[in-house]
Image 1 (cartoon, rainbow, N blue to C red):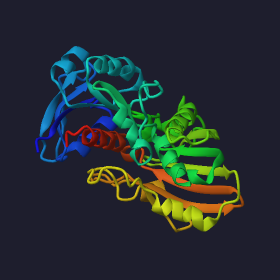
Image 2 (image 1 turned 30 degrees about the horizontal axis):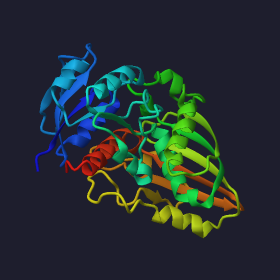
Image 3 (image 1 turned 180 degrees about the vertical axis):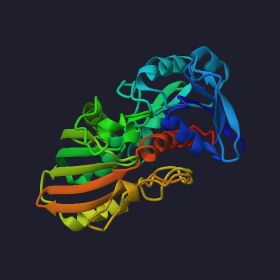
Length: 331
């Protein structure tokens, strides 16, 4: 099988570099070009373990369109992405994006394949296909398994790693030995995106509140979640819902799809970002770790950890493209 020709926008950022790593020897996609701002154009980036480098090109819509890529992965900042992605879509390109700028447009689905992959089937020739915010992806994978019990309200507090702020991130004197109890726009994103993803399953809309903090952790977002149901739930039923959760209708054999999207942690002090995020240099980090599960009447509490660079960003972008290519008959 000939691999599909792809390019990365925003290749010099943290997520762009993670996409480069994950695309090395990918069975579906062949990385053909790297794009970034004019300030980075002309420089080179290493694209494989053997030291092969590619020159970075300036991200110009007309030039990108002339190359006829099968898919364009977008990892640019949300301000830059908003216009560029729309221009490329208007030219008939398939954009699979991690950027937030266009996520809430009515014709842009936010897809977490285990939950709502069938929305990809409704896309036209030129489209923008988005994955959610890094914290949102972890949260919805924690909520989807228990949605059957009729959720009344959700309260989530996030402890988010500094890598989620991109490069260079937060000044060290602001974050070392500190917790910053505010991340611009993050709480609004979590609320809006969570409802957009879960409402696609025709679930009743529930009350959702979020408090987002930045902590001195390199990688891995931890989220403390409290769920109120309409009626009393049983601990064993909750455990089974987490343990057995998967979408059996998903196409089989997707390279980036984990066998199980949720790992249950039995230890009282797990999950932890250092122990339960992906490990550098490996094709992992796509599962969400859940632990500290407590049930009291109609209240469920649990803690989750999501790898913000893999499942929360580059890995979800890549997985969405794999689903799109499979449903579109290209694979």
